[in-house]
Length: 300
Image (cartoon, rainbow, N blue to C red; front, side):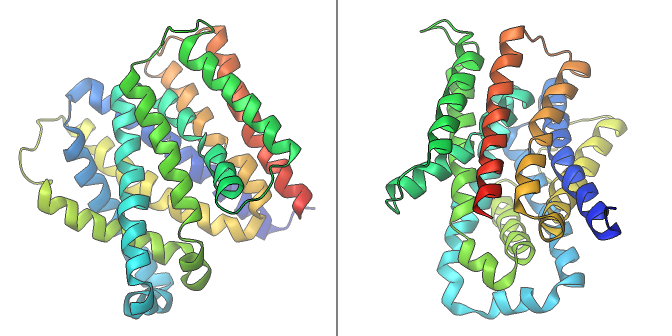
């Protein structure tokens, strides 16, 4: 029988990526319906999600948070992660949605696993395993089908959408690798909470969320605030909470819930038109994620 601890872990492990996928769909809906400015959305998202997560950590992991703030030896590492990790991952993902759609943006960011492989091969001079080479071939084939529908020289999405989707994947990979030492010392939630919250404060100096506020209905305000806080902040908290309950291998597999959620809800709620070749391309990228999860299972 599955223990109650693992059941809760599995629940959180599914709910976290589900909330992230839902967040992307809500963001696209608001872009389409309200025509919101990307920078304003980012200022709202960073500040309020960062504030919510910061309060959560302040209540449940205060000691690690205070130790992180007081540790001068990691200050520059934290600043680099803040700019090129948390901030750029949020920024590039939101622009990718605005330039394409939530489903494609989320699926393209899933390619971050490939950039992680490249990092270990190029920077640390680790020879790729056969499963890594297979993952690369499968992912590139899936991306080619999604982007071109099998027709060389013909893009099915804008070049800007493709660029920002791939750039988001690169930044996500950096945000996965770079803070390993910080996370191992202070835990993932204090690092993420402090980074998001400070990024939100600083970005609001450039684009305050209370200036040039778009006119929206009460329902749209609810969608913006509720899903910004719940999906970004608590989705992140649930993900990290489940990590030590069910293990990295299970988490790697369940991370596929995010692009699946974005794709299914985009089709059913936003009436995104898809063809069979889109399904095949997306399926190949999801297969790449599964292959990488099985690689971790073999390592364990």
